[in-house]
Image: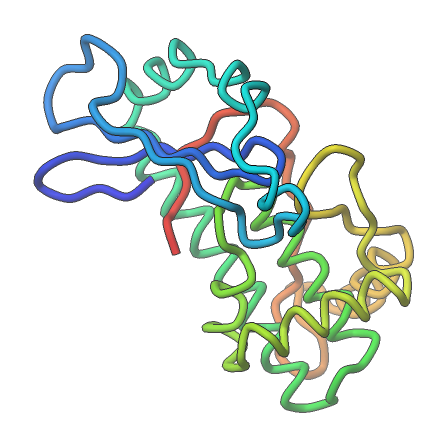
Length: 207
């Protein structure tokens, strides 16, 4: 969710498209006053060329978005906590890249950070990762492709983003298991798994 003195946005991703809904500050009594639809960061080029389909528009659940909007003040604190966790995971991946290059530990951490950002509903996880890892978005995209090829990042049918594979989880576990405080020998915080299975609509930080 992005908020300022005038209002806030709630974002949802449907396939390769990101839908942003905006409400003004004040009681939520109806649907959004502004809505934008644009390609997701990881959308397939062929889907973008075909344009926004009626299927994407039919899947919009305005009632669910309104219910979430009514909970925005409480959700903001939770959102900030989640954002800090996601930032920390990406920064840890950046430290691994600086120390080890494109290693298996870096690819596992990168896969975990990317999957969590995509699952949170973030419309542009690659630029977000690029900023925190301090690399160009094109470089991060290449690293994510390698993570997929090498078996650290799986795919989810009909859904953008991906899932952390058992191979990546084993690497992450090996980084943290010998240390009671959740850090490895490089001082990197372990990035734990999050339960993100419950809610389809989310308030997310816009990056």
